[in-house]
Image 1 (cartoon, rainbow, N blue to C red):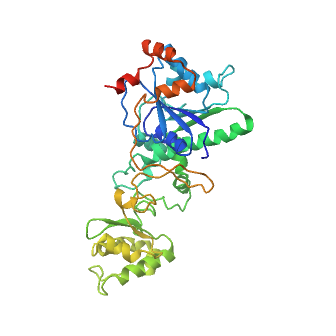
Image 2 (cartoon, rainbow, N blue to C red):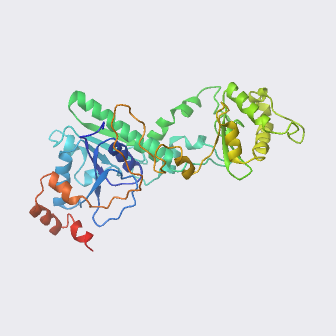
Image 3 (tube, rainbow, N blue to C red):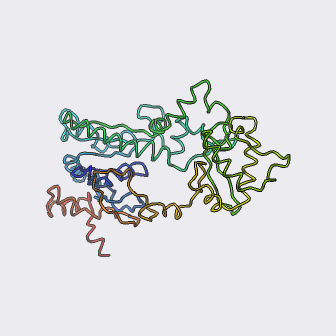
Length: 388
């Protein structure tokens, strides 16, 4: 696998940090998650990882972590600015003039820009998205925008961008032999992955120039929208280009009675696509049309066409399109020459400290040293806990 032989130390955090580690683990990296003592975990992004539970606030625990990171290729720091420095594990310890691992890629993943006025504040995806400028452009109502779960800032602009930064830094290390700090913040990351709409909004003739719900991609266009069907399920329609709209409209009208139309008798034509003044009537017509049949009826009628109309599937239905048939998303993209391990389709929960013994042996910690760490409160004996 592409990252075989790469050792990653991931300090336990919430969604974006674990996702960055998951991307690396799925591609062969040996990812060790650092957990707190006596902690439980609901982290479901831990496939292929191991866990070491240690208290870095105790000297022995901190020394263990230094020793572990000294032999690593990557460190993922998911904390607010300054936390790792207070623990004595900041970048300078490893990459400074007297650093103990000058080849380390030190990846810092924060919510807000590290030098901005919000850097010490708590926040979540919705807050980072709010400061990015992107949330103000998203669909919703005329009163307020709607947010897309916690996908855009946490995962796209956070975890995935962080993983990209790590890979770029590893490539650069191959040229220079030196590690470096990779700074990712989710406000900036969300802005970067949203470059298209943000840049488009700057154009005088932008399709994002009107109020929310009146633009091409934010629900204002009747041919880029979601429609409810007779059974309460939905169809997505995305026929932006004229030729695709023509295919869509042709298929739709063939499925409707000849007399079907609005109360005024209006029916759309191919020209309705470019006549913005007809969009309100077109949306009303499409709303009424899709309600005449079930989602699966429309899916079958549009299947194989260029009408850009497809059913909105639920989680279980979408899994049937995956070659694995599993609801668990598979690693992506597929790389033709890379060997991917066969992953099981189960949901993984990693027990904090479940790999203490093996990880400590790998860095040369003896049984006596481990016992001393336990006595000092730097670690717990997970073997004894497992017997309970």
